[in-house]
Image (cartoon, rainbow, N blue to C red; front, side):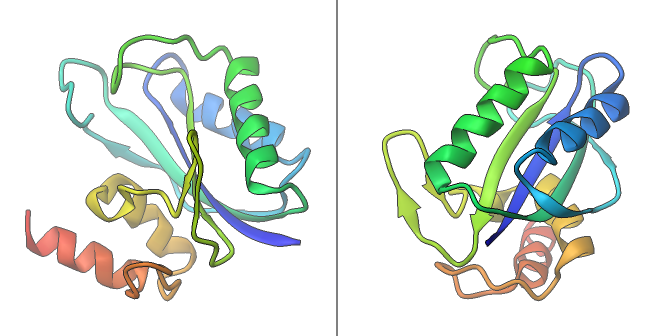
Length: 153
């Protein structure tokens, strides 16, 4: 079994319900799920859209990184995600943040998530779950990454 952290966000429709539905769907291949509380955050980049509801979950999976990505994309489609423009509104967005301490890169997947240290909306709920989780590339805890980000903004 592999420990994975996934970020979930929604800013269309019943956001909290969509997040909860996503977690239920993910339970098909991610077990022992622990979820951070939900946070409301302003959108990044394209600010002319509704606020997001975000959380991070921690769980166990037998799937490989590529199988997990395929499963995450399938879950997004099952929940009605429509392709729009980059950083635009979305029914659901699920990102793989970490997969054990794996450092992995392919054409469509980078683990750890390459921009996690820039995103308060991911780090804040992550700290709720596992503040001492060590980023395998940056060699800092998520708590330290969040403190640095907050200090610089």
